[in-house]
Image 1: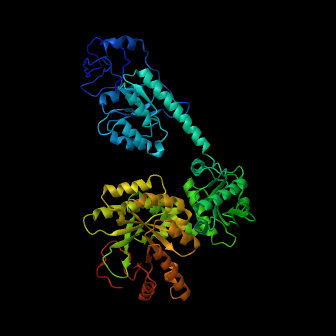
Image 2 (image 1 turned 30 degrees about the horizontal axis):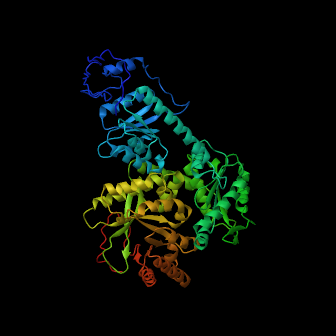
Image 3 (image 1 turned 90 degrees about the vertical axis):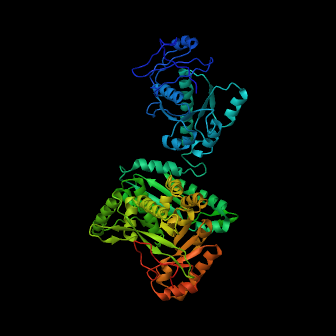
Length: 623
């Protein structure tokens, strides 16, 4: 990049200037291509040598004034992509001197990572750079939805009109011809950023409500809830789930189901009125009433449930009626953040599905249990802080033999007395405390490290349990893929294990995650599988490789009806090309019944108890 410096200098005729220790040398390239360089890294405030012909212009050009952002807004953030260090530092100095926050990238290949970290308002880049041209880099930037509207401005000394047209065709917003004076640079950048921020605000305001339903968008709703906690200690959160949607999707198709759920959203919006309401995923809605008195919580839940009673909704020429379950939480219980409150409402929703009236309130533990839970929670928090969570491994063995080396990872917590606590004890506590995502990341990090340590040998395949909400966290999928790639681990060595109940509630998040994983070879297992209309529909909607049967089958395997149901469940999975795991196998009779039913793998104490070492002999195992 070439800039006409604005500082007035007595050295315009060729003398040396600058602060102590900074020796600046001059050269005289062709007119219009003035550049500067220093023996040491230039400082933004350093005086520059300029072309004598430009001195008069520079002298009448006043020092640019600081350009403030709008009241209360952060400073304008500018990313400068320039391989010439001296030119990059000069541009940075000009922009910083005007009150902007400017950062420099000298390698085009580092631009995307810096965009993700720095979140600039505008990219100012050179056209001609080694390795990747500015046009190629712009195309790469525009290929990411997050940067589709971010201004990109080129600086070019190319006077060919065709080159200018090519720059604009590449997706750039503007170009500035070199040499450019500081005042012109500042004005161009300031105007572009101001307009970009105004358009962004307008877009955000336009998408706060879904145009078809009138409900708040999911993103905006979650933002508002995040702002409300922990101060909010009155009112209630109500979760509404539409039952039977998987069967409807299977029968009518996704597009028709989405139209029906849009109608359901309009009904929810109508009854919610001025109270914030949003569609969280395919079939789950949330309604937030900050000032709702405690004696009205259950009444409001019935109103939300009953909004669908008597409502005939048309789908492909048929009239259907929807059923809803409602779970709610009293915010007076006190929650440190929105995630914890939403988790409590979700837990209430699970309870509601088993209630005759399809309504349930979140029930905190009794005081006696809470005292024990509080101690265990403190131990869990300490274990997370000091990296003391442990993993146990239980082999998953093929019923036909072979050398398939695969284990399920099981998280364990060792308390101060040395006692080990299982996932069944600590995960419910973690859910209420909002720690599930942190636990999931620690467990996944450890599992990936183990796979990395085994690289080059016959490594095991690890089944790693994860909550669907963790998988849907921003950046989690990319972090997982990057971690595998950094250690050279094949995706097929990792199986992400998600519980059925979790998958049903967060099916949208799970599908988005799966789309990222499939191309990398990472596999998915649906755990706690028990056949029903919704669960069976989910089998065909997700790119699964495995299903793990619910303990419901092994616990009652002596009953003929259970055996028949289990056999049908296994056959259904096999028709979809899935392999089936039977768990909690503790005796030979259960193993034999599973084998006769067509099971592929078994897991349980009959094979081996969960242990802290992966030393099971798969090749010579006999079942």
